[in-house]
Length: 296
Image (cartoon, rainbow, N blue to C red; front, side, top):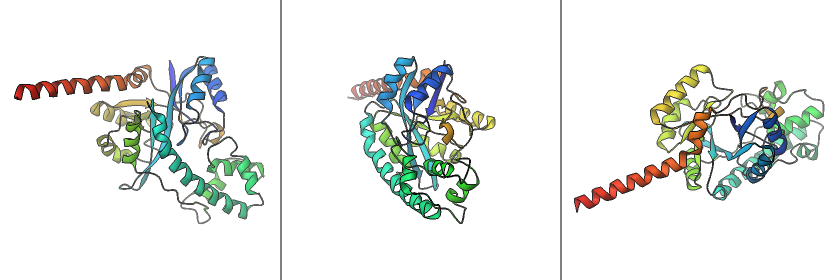
């Protein structure tokens, strides 16, 4: 059973809608997916309802943006199976507001540099909960200034090293806060694509913070890195997941749904993780109570 546990839709920075994503999964022989839009839980219930119609299991998820202030790096945490996802709404809203503010600044800069209107750019973000760089680039594609989302023009506008960039700073919550919020909502915290932001050196710190797992299989991870991450997960007895990080045409490279998946064994561990954790907690409480009684 193929399970792609990292997929994006139009609700964030993906190019396809929820139903289209699920149809692609069904036709690709993928039985299980997780919709993990950036800082957005809006597609969870709808995804599960539509998934049942097409025989595709949709696991509730969200990809939360964070920042490691000590390391000075961005970090993304995938949250799965939250018992009370509404408890994450405050965190998502704060990040969404910050991202929206930055998006508007970038949009205004681009609209002043190219003969396109802000309305034209906003129309390309229709259906999304925010304005992303991909939407700005799509507008520039339609205006004839480039034939690709990612490429020379993208680098000129959005690379920190570019002297002509239009970037605006976005403040993200601290990584420890995000992991704590995931657990507060009864969710499972998994480190997304550690190679993408080069989070390898910080993994041990995140495990100490309570990280439940690592996205081992991802298009940006090499075979050598997969071996290294597997060893870390086995050593600390934490979960291993995999996903394509599917964005449709808004992806930074050509990636089809199911390019990377979570093996059945590890999907089963994810699905049974919270129940196992509760059993271990109850056992520890009983042992502690028995020890206290014996000492009286």
